[in-house]
Amino acid sequence: MTPAEFMSDGLANVANDLRKQDQPFAFATIVRTAGATAAKPGAKALLGADGTILHGWLGGGCTRAAVKNAAFAAFKTGQPQLVSVAPEELLAEKGVSAGEEVGGTRFARNGCPSKGSVDIFIEPCLPLPQLIILGGSPVARALATLAPHFDWAVMTDLPDPNTPPHHQRAIIIATQGQGDIAALQASLALPAQHVAFVGSGRKFETLAAKLLDSGLAADRINAVKAPAGLDINAVTPEEIALSILAELVQVRRAQVDNAQA
Image (cartoon, rainbow, N blue to C red; front, side, top):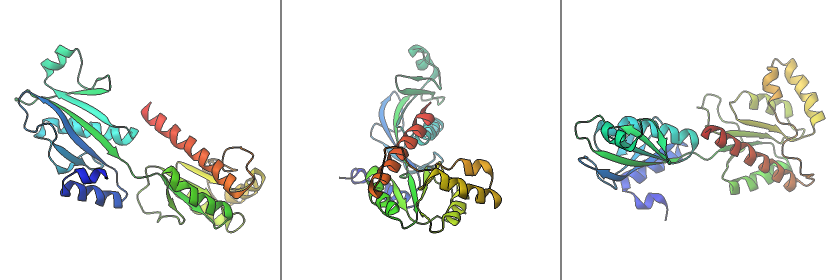
């Protein structure tokens, strides 16, 4: 069963639409309440990329700011968040302050007259990281076959430059002599967290000089990883693809660690 099958049709439909649009969203579930609260445990809502409620209900406005901030943290780190919204006197009894995180729970102040407490679990659903593979070489084909097994959304064409930047994008140029310069120029015009070139370092030095002469900024050119992949003494196209995927895993995990720091 998929998570959508445990939800109301409306919630599931909104989630599926956002997934098709490659948009981030989050599920928020009330897991505990104390005192007077409008919503009760089990109440659910779906949050958009801006933290607002797109579908469902979490009670009145007392929790909205806390939920929105927790959603932003979940989108940034990719990790679930638990936020506890409580009146100031209860926070003081616990020895915590609004905005403080203790034991995996972030506390927020409930300024509403009801003085109730609400604990809300927020689980982010981020688009799969995007891997753009350029070229029809054996390495490109092997990489396109392997990458989905490591949760990459594979594309073989560059998106329109006017499309919103993807939250996590890598571009691998595996043209291997068939339009190398054009592929590099087009790739470096797009925002991406990682751009790599399949080919020797010496070959890329020659191409880099041409790119510099064409007017591309040196810092953009120097950001290209060449040769692509970790050094595992790879020989076959499949082994080279494996080395590239290993490097992509390394890059992706480093980005997650940096976001959580």
